[in-house]
Image (cartoon, rainbow, N blue to C red; front, side, top):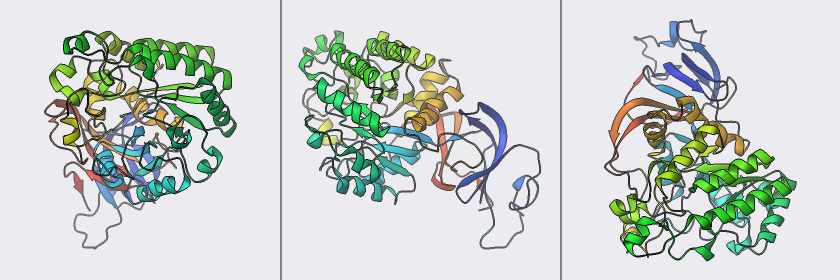
Length: 447
């Protein structure tokens, strides 16, 4: 049994925002009640405080003093790369899960671009079975196309039966519109999710760097927003035609936001995600951080960044997803045009949301929690993402005002432009199924 005492309880599903105690039993939220009321038997004494003189080896209740902190649903990330199987020198399922827990995430959805590719039951089941050993919920998408070749559909029905959360060829854009339509028709039939990496490679000369003022300064052409915009427009319209549920991944272009907004207005079941780095940084970061600011799609202009924030504010962008993409230091030390794209994201995501969205007044804390827990859970029809009696005991407990400097990671990798930055908002506990899976500082009593 676990009692979380006196925190600011925020539930984005109900709009609850009050000081309350939360009691968790057998991994499930048993009761939420305002501070000051007596608790029924189970946690000893009033307000659930354990008897100070108890000599029992196994006390009946673990208590966390959450005064001054926010208690919210465990964060859900629908877009992570744990590089396992096949590329575990960058990350593995266990280190990825540790990074997730440190960042306040209790549920993550892995992408299928592993080695071998996750287009088969064996690879999918390996990821899911390893995930069960981590202490958090590790889900996985399977591939849309066999071998990521964009030609032949995987057996979606069989992969769903073996636990696939949804489907994506993330990292490899699907270029054949007729194939995409076929995939969406099958996904609609099966009531599952397709997630799309939207970059038309025919418009790109060097990936990872926005085509614009910075690329010109660097003497390269880069990747124009047109590469993203063209595929977003195509897939939004195919989604409208087929009725499929589609997630536009890591949106970076302001024009792409406008297209998603129009598609939703027309009735398409289109969702959109944005990364913390895309709402926090612009192409200028490449001049300061080099390859640590290289990602697909690239960081774009300040105008694009503001349009992303506007999309978050008005609901056009549903979710914040990290696209957690670890690489080795040796890989990121290669020249700009040769180094792989992608950065870490799990351990800094919440703080970047608080620092760059909540503190400036773009989003309320409740709205941020909706983007980082409730909406991602709804995309995949998960039971988490909200704080209600009978729901899973998955929580992030954080100090919204604590400043901290980014120094080191639980991840195997350290490819982040935010190293050395001072951010606001510190994860103090991550709790999954009623179990503490990450403890930032000692605040417990009665254990």
